[in-house]
Amino acid sequence: MKVPRRRILHVIPTLGEAGAERQLSYLAAALGRRDWEVHVAVRIMGPNAQRLADAGIAVHVIPAISNYDPISIVHLHMVIREVQPALIQTWIMQSDLLGGGVAQLCGIPWILSERSSGEAYGQAGKHRARARLARRARAIVSNSHSGNSYWAGMVGDAVPRYVIPNALPLEEIASAPLLEPADWRPPGRPLIASVGRLMRVPKNTHGFVLGLRAVIPRTDARAIICGEGPARGEIESLIDLFGMQANVRLAGTALKVWSVLKTADVLVAASFYEGNPNAVLEAMASGCPLVVSDIPAHRELLDETTALFVDPTSPTSIGEGVLAVLRDPDAARCRSIKARGRVAELTIEQMASQYEGVYEDVLAGSSREHSRN
Image 1: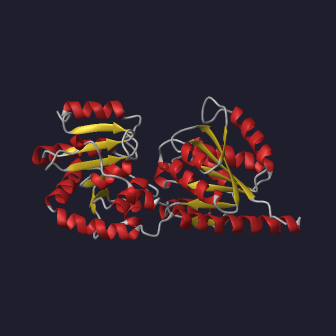
Image 2 (image 1 turned 180 degrees about the horizontal axis):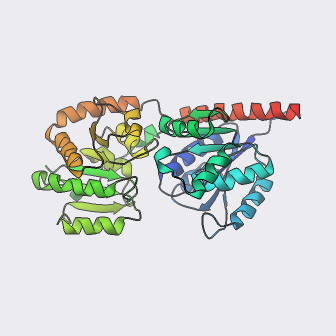
């Protein structure tokens, strides 16, 4: 007799370009290859929907005019009634509030995914509401020890906590071609890359651009900034103000990030805080030398043998870090080789196995509670 596949519903605001969306698409596809029937509830579709479609994952669009539209509650409840999941997992704060709340109403075990760290949250009402609701979760899975530490302070031992780092499609990264066309990197000119949303906090795109002021006149380097975000207009103004239009390009999301990282001489990640940063992990897998901000999230992944650390509050420090990489490419190459070795086991299948362990723990606990009742 065939055992029915277990059902899980993932709830996330969008399927856009950001890291959480990519990680969900990796995990959902891997679970779909295992003993799981995977469903995803989302408000806005995006590029990562294609990976889900290719894997045969059911996607349910929740009509709403904003992340906190009350009508979302009704529509998500309808999806849950249709799917009848054994578990609900939420990604990003808006979905933690929506999905966690509806999961409680429906009596379905809920797992919260933490994608950042404590610095991302303050005393706003939505942050306090999320922390209170999280005490009702059956598990909290953080992608970094920084995120786990935040929840240790919020819920203590009342909720089981796990750390599962982000995964990488290592074979896809290895097969990615170098960046084309050639004019992105004219012969003999170094290429500097930045990958992430264009924003002051946490990504510090402004600090990166200001740091380039000391680099470009000395090296005639090209810089590519991959990503979109609310600070695009300000970044364009900075580039114009310092006369760097010919050397710095805002590529948006038009370029394949892995090709950029495999071509670039250095990736600069100057964030003020992070969880488990996808761009840094992808640079490590691509063999791209790294200049990173000296923050706990980066120290969790790297040390002085694998990256150069800089002060994110100082554009001068950022620029000096880039110059150090460009002046000593042999040392940079040695660091990048060591960094690549550190991500060799961060496979998608390994991540899926770890999540399955969490799901089994949660379902076993729910079975014990049902038996007592």
